[in-house]
Structure formats: C-alpha cells, structure tokens
Image 1: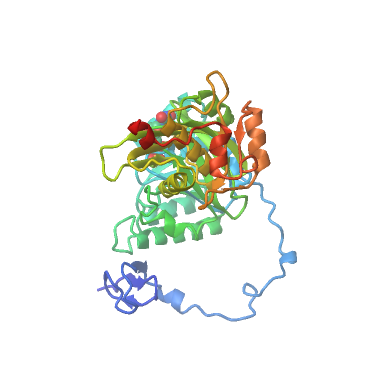
Image 2: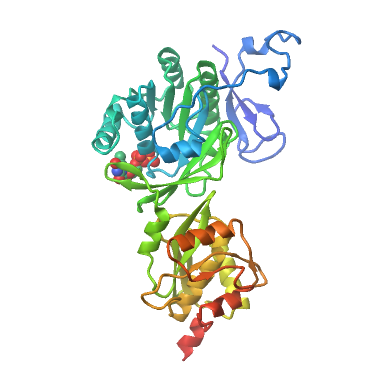
Length: 458
Ligand code: TYD
Ligand code: MG
C-alpha cells in the first residue's frame, strides 16, 4: 500500500501525529492539529550547497528593478486600492461575506481585462459554467463589455486547476473560491484549514513561477472566524475586504494589506441591476438623504485616507425587556456600550431602561473611535426627542472620540473632515476643538440632557 500522502501537524508546537486529534498530545492545545501534505522524498533529499549561483545573497541595489507594468482591472476604485493595478505574479485575496458581490466584482474585472486584450481565466469551484455565464450575461447587458469573453473552468480539483494554469498561462486567473478547491493528497474536506493552506501555497508557487497574477476569493463569516481566509492573510501579497450588508446596496472595498500599495484606502460601490457601480460622490448622497429628525446626526468619518460623510441614526424607546436591547449596525457594539455608559455617567443622559438602536445609514461600516461623538449626539437627541437642528436647516455634523471621563479627544485628519463637511454645506459642526467634553458638546447644540426615564416619569 502506498504511504499516506498527508501528515497531521500541530500548528502550535509542530508535533506530528498519524491521525487527527482534537487536542495536541504534545502541547495539549486544542484544535491545533491540521492536516498537511507529507513532504516528498525528493524535497527531503534536496542537496544544498552554499555559494551556488542561486543561493548567494545579492546587494539590493544590484537587483534589476521590476518595471513590469501593472495589469489595470478597468475598475478605477479597485485599481486605486491595488496601488495602480494588479502586479503580475502576485496573489490577491478578496474576502467578504457570502452574497456581498465578490463574484460580481471579479467577473466585471475579468471582463474588462479581457476586452482590453489580456488573457484571463475564471476558475470556479462554486458555480457551474452555465451559472457563471448567466451572471456574465447580466453584467454584459449592464456596463461590462467582454464579460462573456472570459474563459471559465468549473473545477474543484487543485491538480487539474494547476495543470490548466500551466498550459494556458493566463495573465490573470481568478479562483472562486479558495475554500472549494481540494488537493487529492489530503483526506480533509475542501475548506478545512489544511486544505485551504495547501491550495493557497501551491497556487502561490505557480503564480510566482509563471508570472500569472492570481486572485483568490474567500468567504468570511461575520465573525471572520471561518477556516480559510484568515489563515491566508500572511501568505498573500494583498488582502481586499468587501464589506456591507447584503440587503443594502452600498458596499465598501478596503485594502487590509498590500505589499505593493497603500492600505488606508477604501472604495465605495453600489450594487445595481447591471453590476457594481463605483460611487464617487458617496458623501453627497448620504448628506442629501440625511433627515433632521430627532436621533439623526451626520458623522464626518475617515474611510482610509478619504473623508466620508454618513448619517448616524439612533432610536431610544422604552423597553419591556430585561436587560434592554442595545443593537447597532455599522458601528461596533462594544463602542456603543461605552458611549452609553459615558452618556449616563458624565452627561446625565441615562438610557438604563430603554432599548437603544444605532444605525449607520446605507449599510456603511464605520470602525473608528471618531464615530463616538456622533453616536452620543444621536442617542442624546433620540432620548430627548428633540432634533439637533431646526427644520429646514442642514443637518448637524460631528466627529470625535469620547474618553472614559467624558472628555472629547481629537482624532486624525480633523481638518480634512471639517473641509468635507463644509464642502457639502454643513456649517453646524461639533468637534473636540469646539467642545472639550461630552457635556459641553450636548449643550452646544441645545440638546437637552434630560433623560428618557425623567421624561417618562413626567
Ligand atoms: P455574488 O457576486 O454572487 O456574491 P458573492 O460571490 O460574494 O457570494 O452576488 C451578490 C448579489 O448581487 C446577488 O444576490 C445578486 C446581486 N446582483 C445584483 O444585484 N446585480 C447584478 O448585476 C449581479 C450580477 C448580482
Ligand atoms: Mg460567489
């Protein structure tokens, strides 16, 4: 019988065992045993001689600089995030929740590249060729010429995929998704940590060798915990994260890691009937849709290096539940808990027995402390039932971090945030510069610090 082609290795202490265990017998860590391909005999016996032509250190200045032009995807926002296009031979990981639009984005990119004369390949382990064709037809009817010209390979066997890349030598290949490919040498099902790592490692090897840029699609659950993309982040050159809520139309694309460009950037897209459309005037849209009702504030957020105005809404309503609900979408729940605690302790706005809902309109996610003040103002305004601006006026705009003692702390890029607010006619600003503490900020716009319970009692 042939020797088993795989071994089980503890990812914590590298101890090897013959079969899978829940706990490593060596270091006693749980869930660390991962299946890996056993090293081949040839690899084990590779002779190494120091001083050979290929393993001599090289002075960096003497290395020929890589001036290969990047492959532009034709989607301006995507190109900007990648730092001017995809670098040939690089690996990009596109992560996001299922249904967010990953396949749509890559089909559009491949279509545009195919129509620009690039050789492309779409490997799908998730959908049949006919299903991919349906999407492509929809996109071509939209605004993506060439979507139907992309060659498709519906395959889940890694070795077949590698052989096709080897023979076709496309300039760009997309693998949708990395969790569906499986290496036959490993017994684990597709999508397990061992499989995902092996699939990625072998694709990276072929990408570097054949100069094919490879884009891996990976599903991430809301908790980001699913075996897969997270274990790949350190292996790939660039990690793009597609965020947003499936039910909403706005999507943000963020570069979390980029060896060939900046990471603090974000692109905003809208899902339409004919595919994803870049939203270049996101601030303008959100401001024009903003209401001046109680509980509404405009937040001047920074999405990477770009200011973005979004509306933050809060609803405070008497609760029947113990403990009352605190729900947030678009902002971190823990951040909301902190803001509510500071509001109660230092600003006299108690929401103790009320349900509190906070929402960033449009499905945008704001993950920065600069959102604190806007959340606090929205909640205070919702609790008092008074709007922060008179009707007919432009909405109030705020940003700033709230400290645990109720002080307001400055946040990066204050000037750019203020400029963005002014650009869209928001003159009523509450910032850490204008108010030193949360209590002062609440007074500034005459938002009563009367608590809901007080109002209910009255
Ligand atoms: P999809 O790209 O398949 O998501 P993912 O690959 O991330 O799982 O599609 C996401 C959703 O977008 C899907 O529910 C259908 C919708 N959609 C549109 O609204 N317009 C379009 O033109 C296309 C192609 C899809
Ligand atoms: Mg998909």
